[in-house]
Length: 340
Ligand code: KG4
Ligand code: ZN
Image 1 (cartoon, rainbow, N blue to C red):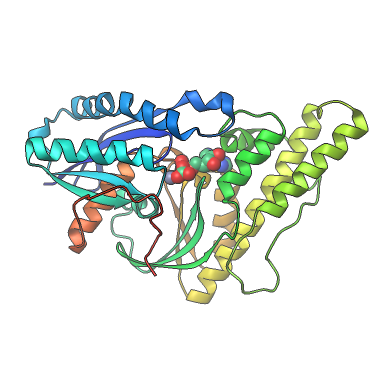
Image 2: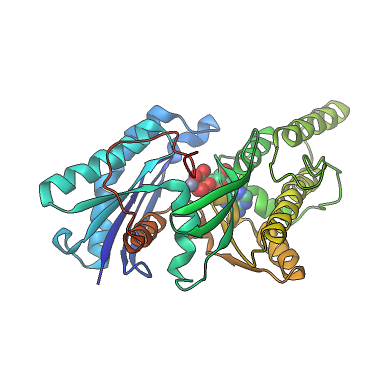
């Protein structure tokens, strides 16, 4: 039996979990930092200070809930990058501290691999190779995965990440941060065909990169023109139509490129991962479109798509089994999916 304590502190969530054998979640805890809401984005200095306050209680609570003591833990898995350096350092130093004090090994986990591998907790026998679509606040990547430590980026965003686009558009219409889940909900009451927003980089066909900054500008221009026409903020119906149309443009591009990548690579299993993978419209559309080419979509419940401690523990278990687990040495804020 293997018991892994997972610690995630790369951005604004202090998240922990205890996972048994990479498949059984004994306990999980996430404290999301409300302190950034009023700034409309994450303030790095405030994030690291809050991690410092949260990390010890977050570890204690999962050990208690899992009913295990530190002495029973086989490994402490911790995110070492990418992310905000101050935030990463809190988790990394904390893990190293316990490791020294208790003689428990640490395992360095790439945050992006953790997102891409968390599905193994409920699909442990899914055969490789798999196509991964990673969509989060900082990343939009199509990744060919031939194993837990064998990944190749097929396409990536050239500017904003998908989640970043959701958050910036939310700011334009005065939604709280992060706006992704709010837009998801409000868009259900809007018409996705109300405004025709650009779908960047769909042509020339065959390109697997993304670009979302033009879409964000188009939404900003639309909001400005509507406000100057009416001289007041958008009415609720109009705002929901705008958000549904924006979301549709993002989903449309993500779905088309993923289907193209799966088809071209001959991959029939597609994993949807990262915070934006919680988006209901994206999940439904991607599943339906993949079915048309005989491919299957594997997603995790929304709480395992956004940042969490389980994904760190699950990725570490995969690395132990593959013989590629390494102890944590330092924070690596710019760690890529794979080194060139
Ligand atoms: O993976 P994640 O929790 O953190 C990063 O590693 O970035 O992703 C956070 C991003 C945010 O931009 C947030 O707005 C977005 O995921 N997000 C969503 C939804 N839930 C979270 N975007 C669209 N629809 C959602 N339901
Ligand atoms: Zn993340």
